[in-house]
Length: 148
Image (tube, rainbow, N blue to C red; front, side):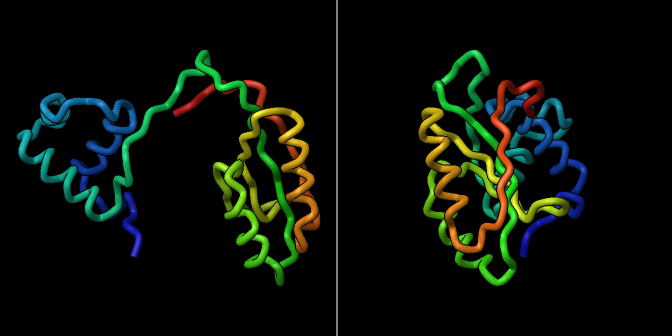
C-alpha cells in the first residue's frame, strides 16, 4: 500500500519539504530547523526510506549545464484494448524519462530525451508506429522557466 503524504505527521512533512529544497542539508541543520533532536531526524529518515516514502536522493543539473539533449513531451492517445502491449513497448524505450497517465485530450504524456533532432524524429516515428497508438502531439522543450 502506498503512503500518502497527508497521512504523515507535520514533522515528517516538514522534513520532506526541507529535503526537497536541499537534499544535502545536514542532519544537524534539519534538526535545528525542525526544532527536534538529531536522533529524531535520523530515525525519521530511516523510517521514511524504509517505507519507500523517500525513494532516493539525486542531483539536478542547472540549466546552464547542458548535455545538448533535446527534451520533448508527447501527448499520446491509445486504443483501450491495447494499453498493456503499448506500455510494454514504452518500457523498452530508455529515452522515455517519464510516462504519466492523464485525463483530458490524451491518455498519456511522455517526457522524452533525445541526443539529436534526428533521434527525436526516430523516437516519434517509433511511438507512432506502435500498434494501438492512435494519435500523438509533440512539443519540444525550449527552456525551463520554473523547476522544483
